Amino acid sequence: MTQQIIPVDTDVPELAAFARTVEDLIGRGLDERALTSAIQAELTATLAAGFALPPDKTRPDPKRYVMYPLHVAPDGSFSIASAVWDVGQGTPVHGHETWGVVGIYSGVEVETRFEKPTIPDLPLTPQGTDEWGAGEVTVCCTTDDDVHQVRCGGDQPVLGIHVYGADIGTLPRRSYDPDTGAVHWFTSTWAH
Image 1 (cartoon, rainbow, N blue to C red):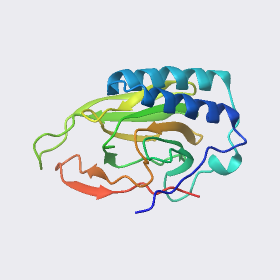
Image 2 (tube, rainbow, N blue to C red):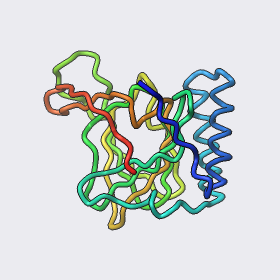
Image 3 (cartoon, rainbow, N blue to C red):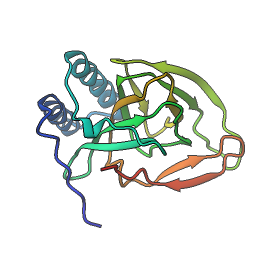
Image 4 (cartoon, rainbow, N blue to C red):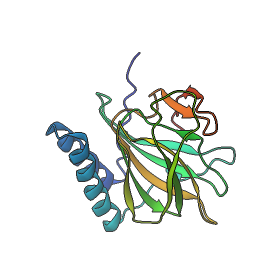
C-alpha cells in the first residue's frame, strides 16, 4: 500500500512548528510514557499560545464524528488530526493500537475509559469518566492502556487536536461491545 503524504497546512505555522517538535521527540527514541508526556507538554503550550484552524478543518458532519488530517509523517510514524464531534455525537468504545495525546481546541469532550480486555468475550470494566475543556490536554492512550469512548459534552461541537503514533486515518483498530466484549475491526478514514 502506498503511504499517503499529507503535509501540515501551511496556513497554520504553529502546527507546522509543533509537528517538527513531535518529529524531533520521536527521533530521540524516548519510551512511550516519556514521549507522550513530552508531547502532552508541547501540545499544552501550543494550545495556550493560540492559533486559528482553517474553517474546512473544523466543520462537524451531521451524520458522524470526523477526523481531518493536519499532518501525516511521510514514514507514517505519527499523525496530527483535527477531530470534530457535533452536539450529541460520540464514538463507539474503541482502542487505538498506538499511543495518543489529545488536546481540546474548543468545546467539551467527555471521555469514558475502560480496562483493556485481556480475556475475549467478557463485558468491559469501566474505569471512570472525565470531561476535558478548551486548553486541556491528556494522554488518551498508550499501547497497553487504550480503550475508551468519547462524546461531545456540551451545546457546541467539540474540536480536539489529536496526535497519534501512526497514520490514524489508515490504521486498523478495535471497536468493542462494552456489554459482551465482542471485537470488531474498523479504520477511521480521513475526512476531506
